[in-house]
Length: 272
Length: 212
Image (tube, rainbow over all chains, first blue to last red; front, side, top):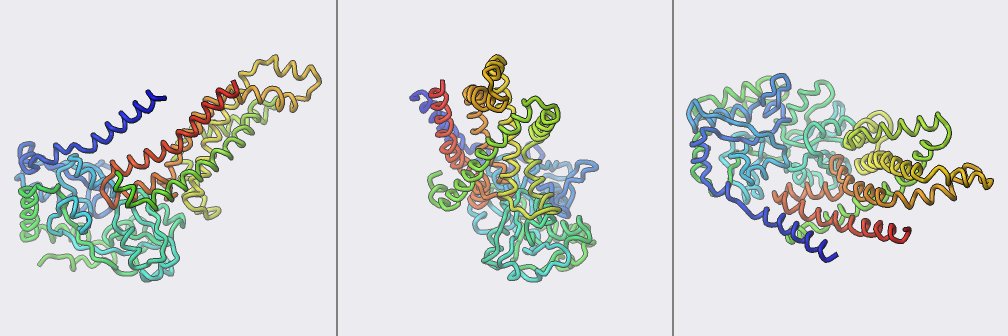
């Protein structure tokens, strides 16, 4: 018995220690990406329009991906490599903090809570929370959701946001967007809430059965996340975003990805 | 870690409760159902043997996640509306029953044939011989693997997190998503899982000694 307790506490102690190291994130990210000529980005694989894995060629495609490639080119020159690591809403910030990736570009909303643990670039996309419902649903505005079940995503800030506009809604959080849409279609919830850009993508994947409703009820500026104390890398990313927006490439990317989405006024997104 | 425990104690307590409830329901019902399936497999009736066999092979060979997802997504769509907790617990119950059935069957079959023959020759019916002679001996044999399976089912109940069943795992994911501290959140629930499973495994060890 005594031996057992000893070995268990030893194991737990080791776990505790492993949580303390932070060597990779202390090094200069800008130096690292320059020397390897590669920026490793955390992206998501299940968001049509922003970042979706095309199962035909196994490549990530979407607005976030094109932005990441453009920023990589700005920082490292035309030969710079952008490498993509798949993350979920839940794992994107831990991946960055543990040093697995250099930066996160994954429809990540800039929030004060997140800004305490990571650094955000300037916003590169202005989204807002909205609702996805089955076609013909009676839910037209956020307050209609009181007493209803709302599906959210683990790690997405919509879970907290929806409680502010519909305090009596029951929120259940699913692991990813694929599961969340399946749950909505199986009537496990009355609405799915997330950022409008993502929801339009999901609606486009299920034409005729799902629609986006209720306008936007929050403002969600997306930012690129880097680790704290990485000022040079942070500034380089901000400069790259500025350049991409000034050169007109940004507007081209907006049109490329959002120009065909029904109900989405992509021209509002243009940088003049 | 202590900070997580203090700040999120209400979520952790509710997760602890749902995990225990799901595990307890699964433990009781899958033990009863598992014994029934095991009996189907050993009674001298070809059709019953087949049914028991098919049940075990289906539920033992499909990943738990798929069984649970079936109850979470397919059943509400076409049959009856059930929530994540119910779907998860039903899935866990059917899955665990298959394993318990196999354990009990192996126990019954390891009781020597002579026991059954001896009991029958004293005039007992097959039912009586099974009930009073074979099963009690079989239970004694299967206590260690059964304890193993009970501990497994408690850990398997973390599957509820995937269907929004509000168990410990679900709460840990939710806590990690607001604190961005996945390691410590998982660490806390790891300790809570040990608190549930340890007494059970000690009880099974005690039972083993007492029955021996």
